[in-house]
Image (cartoon, rainbow, N blue to C red; front, side, top):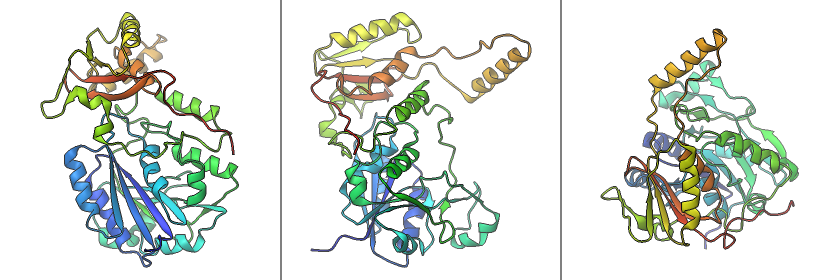
Length: 389
């Protein structure tokens, strides 16, 4: 039986450009030491992208590809990375992103400085949008901007035993969160010392369209505030998540899938699926939604229409922003805004309760965009928070 490698590198992925993944893995194939493995965790890419990602990972003997069937769930870097973290058998585990490129000495330097009492970081150099000199990256370092010591996500190397003991990243964080900052805080509470490798090695961040919490259409209204509240509420807890952290989902266990026809792009409504079709911007619609969902028997589904309402656009965003700016200058209270989709804003909060919602699929293309929620039984399942270590 082969001995486990010294290091496991976990890369999270969902519907990203394949060339980002290709360059990331090619740089790891060029390392000066081979004592590592790479786990690419695909957190619910569309079938065509998933096939391309699997083929790309399959070109490298050191790389494993794991697909988790999470289509219809919000992107969660925490949950994606935890799949690889939980299955690591190496002494150390490093989490990173698909848009990173590593110099040939990176793994060697990392293993030289890894220790049970340390968490290792290295902030990246940012490549510009039009960069194409991939064979001579180091030549461009003097002209590149480098991230500061708040850039934890590109390289976060931790003793595997401790990372698994605290059950990985906090899986509450979805959409775009602060999972790496939160983990850094918890690791320090556990006694680890923060060590930066910026003066010993480096890495590069490939350009891609902005994907932070201000990115267009990325997060529901209010989600960022809930993320911050959660972080403050649990900031003294080192161990998080339930015992089933790092879970890999399969299509056969996704209860919402039985109400969706992916080939025909339609909802298969029947006796066990109720279609909810109300104006999505009215308070009375939210009240009716709550009553309808609570009246469902366990295992039945509610298909809520109009997930795509209202139709947003960058042009309209610009008009609203400048219009409110002029209203402010005139001393008037800013009133320009979209009509909020109150029904689906409520759903974004409701799906966080894993006792009430057994499974869900957000923003399926049918019926002007539809979200399907499968009723669970309150108290039957769901995550439990663990006491502080």
